[in-house]
Image (cartoon, rainbow, N blue to C red; front, side, top):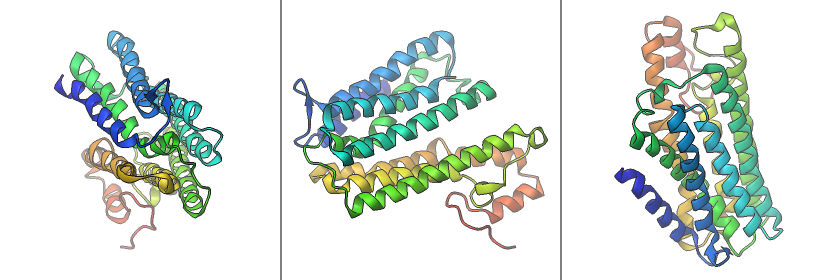
Length: 284
């Protein structure tokens, strides 16, 4: 309960950092409005999820939250600035693609075993949705700071470099997700680990793609940031920490070790394939 109540306070601190001569909505800082939207979407979605005892639209609502926050930011903060519109649209495109992919994956796979012990507990389940709102706020903080700024995002060298990196990350994430989708759709691969396509160069290429594209967003908005707003450049660092240490790599590595740890083929794959960054396999 304490964490649930403190998360909005953390978000409010982020708002204080983001608001430096920023846009307002009827006198309210635009960044604050965006944070309120993020938490409102999550908490409203939690209500039917708790009563229906389901987590099946959790990931989809996460993507919807990104979309809602960025749409609000663009409507009240873009002012026809091409750079700002591009940054906002890139985040929305990523959220639509990922949300759609995760929604249909859940429909095919069914319930997520990670939520089995969480759903019955009101406060723990609410905490999960609350932390997702905080996740959205921190991850999108650099983009929100730039969009809400009174300065226009210059379409220059930093913008071009960031766009190239974003495109590379987006392409890697899409290719990795598609590769795993095709692999799992083949009945002959039932119970096997994926080691084809990008997955032959990295054990978690989808996560590398996501980290990369958020790095691109941070570089695109870098020239607009001022003072304490530079702290929002930690957004890709935060994404890396979550995907590697909290909800992604380490957890999946433990599951894989438990499932295939005695399989010589998996041992070879694990020992010769990069954990995150796609690089050619080691020679043994």
